[in-house]
Image (cartoon, rainbow, N blue to C red; front, side, top):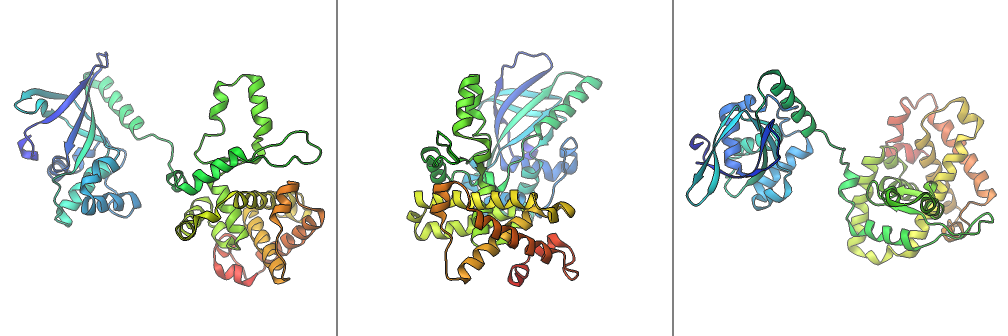
Length: 388
C-alpha cells in the first residue's frame, strides 16, 4: 500500500450474512486512487463498463473543476466509487484502527471517471490532491471460478445501472419551482363545461410526485385524487418551459427539445429571479396555466386537421411556432392575450381556436417550402422565427 501513498485504508466491515462475498465501506484519499491509476492504468478498470472518457463530457469537466477549485467539497459533490477484489488483508494499525493494508485483483467497477480524472489533474495540471477524499464500497468476492466471475460481472453491471438524471432534474429545488409547486397545490381552477367540482393543475416538480401518493390509497381515494388532479392537467418542468418559451416567442428554443429548452429557460428565469422574484406570484401561475391551455389546445387542434393527417410529423415544432406566431400577431394589432380570461374559462373561445387553425396551417406551409431543407434543423434557428 505504501507504493500508492498510504499505509492503510480505515474501513468498516458490513455484516451482510452471506458466504458469497464480504463487504466493506471506506473513505479513500484521492492520492491513493490517482497513484493506483498511474501505476496500473487500464488494468484497474478492466471490469468497468467504460474506459476514461477524457475531459470532453460535462461531468468529467466538472470533476476536474472541483479538483482544481473546490478540493474541500470533493467528498460531498462526488458519488463515490464501487470496487471489487479477490481478497484483502485487514490489520489493526495504531491511531487508525481496522485498515485494509493490501488487495488482490483490485478493480474499480463504478467510478472510473472519478479515478482517472484525479490522475489526469495530478499529471496535466500538477494539482495537489491532499484534502480530497472519496467514499468507497468494496466487495470481496469469495466465490471462485466461473461463479465468481459471473458475480463480478453482474455487480459491475448493476453498479452502473441507474435511472437517467436529466438537466431538468438537477434544478428541481430552485425556489422558482418550489413556488410553482406550492401554487399548483393550493390554487383550484374554476370548474368548466358544467362540472360540479374544481380541479388543480398538478406541477410535478420532481419525477414521480404525481403517482407517489396513490401507492397508499384505496381505490376510492385514488378516484377522488384523480378527479381533483386529472392526469390531463399534470405537467413537469419541461412542459412548463415549452409553454413559457412559446408564449415568449422563442419557438426556436422549444424546437431544440425538452432538455435544451429547459436549460435555456432556466438561464433566463434566473436572471429575472435575481432582479425581482416577486413577479412569480399567483397571477404568474394562473397565466402559466392559460399558456398551457393554449399549447395543449393548439396541439389537439393540429392533430385533428386533414392537412396534418395527410403529412404527419414535426408536431411540437408546428405547435410552438403557431403559438408564438399567434402572440406576435396579437401584439402587432396593439392588443394582448387575456390570460386571466382563459384561466377563468379553462378553455379557449371558438374564435381563437379558428385563428389557431389558420396560423398553424400557415406555419405548416412554411415548413415544407422547397428551400427549407431539413425541417428539424430549420426550426432550431432564430432565422426561422425571424422569417415567420
